[in-house]
Length: 225
Image 1 (tube, one colour):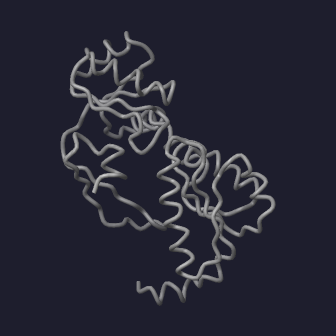
Image 2: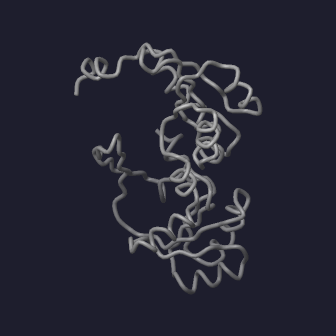
């Protein structure tokens, strides 16, 4: 569909006043500021009546005081992708982009997401939850190496590490614990990596991910050239 036909089907005036929510207080704040400003500039360039809100301590007052017809959520991590912002906007009667409360809350919780997949018979790497050094030794014996360690409720590969021995596993668990009391460890699955988006029920073309780093970490995603 051409840009002209899209604009005729969805004229910018139909969107009303759009609040772009970005920033916030999560560990992914800097990424959100960058992507949020890019979204805001793109909306303004398209003629949309848009403005930005850095989701800080005054967010409730801003949502109440401003005239907002729709919200474009560009918040990353907790407070933006975990269902809490979605619930707040639903209570305020403001339509928003992205998934709803349940999908957002579940997808942001890696451990519970895996349990849902397993209950449905979907293949997923073997995993364990870590809360102490004894758990690290047990996971190493049960899963083998290499392993990936991740905070259960963070995104953007924050606090994530690839490990090849027990000492590295314990160190990675301690580092991930700085971000989350729940830490997930998974078997490494070797092979190509793809990201696939969906828009209005349409599956968009797969995009292959590649990096010279040991895995697609925070630096590879946002900082490296």
